[in-house]
Length: 407
Length: 233
Image 1: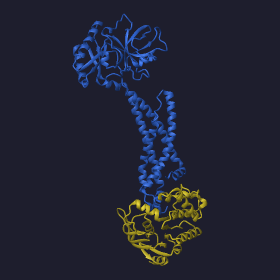
Image 2: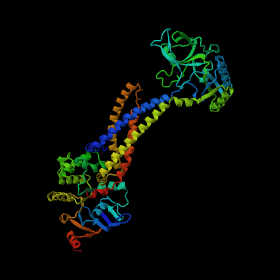
Image 3: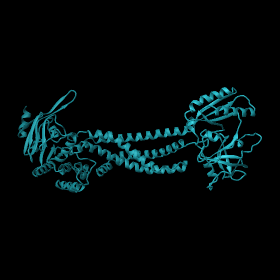
Image 4: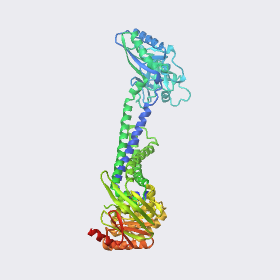
């Protein structure tokens, strides 16, 4: 290998090589940390909500005429009957919210009655009837669904919370971390003093706020219906029927009662996009920055190598005259760039680790996966070698006869 | 042995055609010390480039050690240059970023010799040219004569059959030029064929055979005769 003399020759013209090595180091530092953020956001975006998103859509019914409370109850029952009896519908429920909606209720749960303490656990609240489990397609891991007689209408004269609940496994583990057998039958207190008996545990159902750090997996289903002017329906269709049912049910509901409007008819795919629009934008921006930075680094390498080829035209001709083949000339520049890249990448790896430690502490990010830095180094190395190839090929075409020209 | 027959070299651009060599035929025997003289633009350097495989000829035949050179590809030409031909240039053509040792090492690395063999040859050649103590010096730290000696060491390290010298003393003062010529004579005496291009008649006299090139054509005989003819023409 020619590393020795190439290295020694580079030491005689350090400035350009040091600048490029630094550029590579900075690029690697930013690249791997940006990649870490992108990866974390991508993981978050692709996290399952726990419901059958592919076949579910939502819509809202908004009354613009004053209806008595009992009239509103009747209207909700009629709407749900209409929706549930539409061919192609698996089930439907009226609820205050649903995963990814970015709006809903949350409450604190405690193991003892009385004021909430630091040990209280926050959870999202979904008000549903006995159709909620099937509509959301939740996986019951313990206990059972609500019985129809356990579902009540919200009573404005009685603020007591329903006595039953179905909770997610994550929430159960948070409340009873030492429990190993079953959470069913246990009691937890809500709104300070109201006891709630756990009748079922589901494997997964996210809270409506996807950015609710660390607690997004905590949800509680409560068997209560709320006859408000604004009602949100969640509809689960049979596979392949969703897009056909959306306009059909919207039109049917609109036709069944002229005192309200039907709006916000959305697929869960659309809701997911809205929920993660900020993360998706950040991924795009960071991706663009990383791409741009890598491109600038590659152009820097092209520039330095082109400059070196121009500066060393005669030297290359001399090497050719002394017996260097064209591949040997290309190899010379590739080795030279490998040395610069190696220095830059080692420095960059150290900087990347340092920056990641600082970012993890400052922004509570996940530490970089072990493979991110090696992959980043490999990518930048390959980019660098590709960047060098063009100027190196030009160098290899320099005629050896240049050695006999005066100058 | 070097044999050229009816060699033409024509440089073409879109509008101009320059005939640098016109039907040049020449045989150089093993162990000769040949000088090639001629006025500027006569085709001396073109001849040297063709002989040294630095350029391809336009037509004619060229055999080096019985091998037809005109049909070789770039890789094979590079190999022949590396193994059979040593070059000495007017402006020394050392690589400024490399020290003396590494400069002499350049053609040996292309040859693929192992480290020990390269080291042996470099040391031997630098001793032969009297620069064994300057291995760590860079070209800029040496005099012109010393740089040319390094170039000669580099040319000799591969133990070439042919040494092609292009105005080897053109950038040297008289004393240094003499010492370089003495060195070339010594190298020739040890069996290496030398072809030296020069425009200086006194240097040409040091060769055992002289040829004169004018307008791309070859003329045998003492250079003084041809220079006189050229001047009176």
